[in-house]
Amino acid sequence: MAIKKFFGENSTNRSLPRRSFLRATGISALTISATSACASVTGMNADQGVVDKNEDPSRYRTRLVLLGVAGGPTLLTTDCVGVCTAVVYRDNVYLIDLGHGAQTRILEAGLGGTSEAPYALSKVRGIFFTHMHSDHLTEWPAVFATGVFNSDPGRKDKIVVFGPSARDTLPRIFPPGRTAPAMVNAENPFPGISDTTRYLENALSADINDRLFDSGTASPASLFDVRDIDTSEYGSINPEGIPPRISPFTVWTDGDVKVTATLVDHRPTAPAFAFRFDTPDGSIVVSGDTGPSDNLIELAQGADYLVHEVIDSAHVNRIVETIPVEQREGVRQHLLTSHTTIEQVGRDVAERAGAKNLVLNHLVPSNNPDERWRQASNGFSGSLFVGKDLMEFGVGQHR
Ligand SMILES: [Zn+2]
Ligand SMILES: [Zn+2]
Image 1 (cartoon, rainbow, N blue to C red):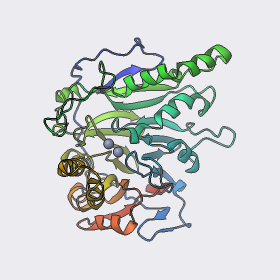
Image 2 (spheres, rainbow, N blue to C red):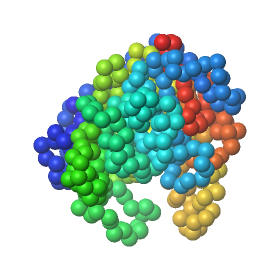
Image 3 (tube, rainbow, N blue to C red):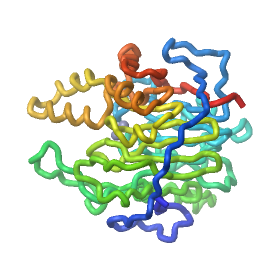
Image 4 (tube, rainbow, N blue to C red):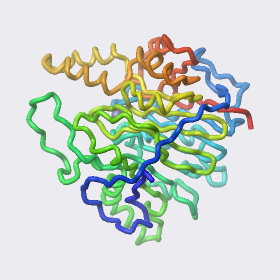
């Protein structure tokens, strides 16, 4: 099993784990089988920029819902919030990343509870963090702190949270030769999701303890079961953050929903994951942040929907003009290596994966015109959709 659990009310040790090299735990390789379900696009048709009101995505048992498509920590527009994607199967919601604004978008998308219990987290079964960059988890503190008030009172099942484990090697310093910076939290400078959650619990202890003392409100630990995805089988993380070539591995099976993952190339940030969700209706893959990745292409083979990040190289060229001349080429190369350009995402990734539909998200910059993003269709024989907040897609057959 590729999961190590460190945080949650049933944990035997609720103190922060000591930094250590994690032992191998026998991650089993997954053989990707071709999906037979045909995917139907419903809701907003991005190619035409119109909403097809004759289609109702909720008629589909499996749905893909884009809650936020903005990439990066800079707020450029109010049209789209931070990156967050929902996979919906029946009434179960699985969230991938929690950028700023995610919880509001859950309600706006109609993925909250019933009118009697209208809570944002009522249907959420799992949360999957692709990596530890702030634009992917900046709403996690809000969800963690207020979760027991945004979920059904008396809820019995926990929301299972998956994310990276602590990095076991320091990344290289960039550019080469630069003096090492003073680290924050030097005894655990690259914590994973469970360590980070423990720090959050401590940071919020005044609020949590106040409510425990005053009214016996349940603590966040009673709602969230936080698990590190252990990748130590693949060796220590390369200081460059370059992932090894691996086959997809199983993260979680929740009834009919199977979640697999792979390591993607977001160098020097590591580990960084892409996730694949298979249901009886079809498959949805979410890339997380990555340059073109053979691991991702294997994970996404034959996917009905590949939700993939994208960056505009023209934007990169513009922003490097604002930094000192001697840093420009290095920073430009760095940004273009850690992310996937418009020219690459269709031709070099989605086409090689044989994905039926490519949905662009994590748009950098988030205020680019659609015409620029649509150039990603060059070299891709499937359908391209430029992601927008609250865009929905149905997978497989109507209910
Ligand atoms: Zn990002
Ligand atoms: Zn990132």
